[in-house]
Image (cartoon, rainbow, N blue to C red; front, side, top):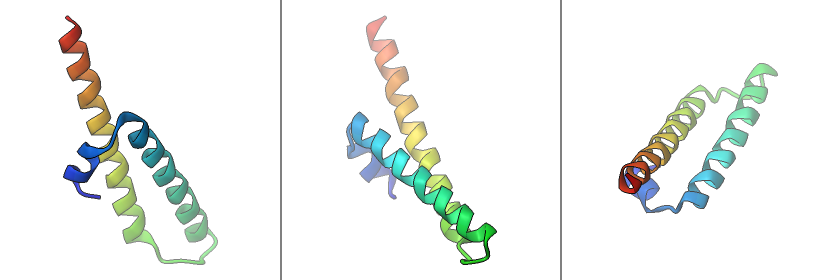
Length: 69
């Protein structure tokens, strides 16, 4: 997912998207453990997307904290 697209999402949408990615990561890990898939690249992409989502959420939290001071 592109950073520009992530920045367009609202806070609730960010939380929902993060939860959805976490579910996909769980499923992929389970499939890899049982030998059903070779989804290592997909797993890496999802982990990076989750990190991007968390980074943007944190940026927004810090910006809101600075504005209230």
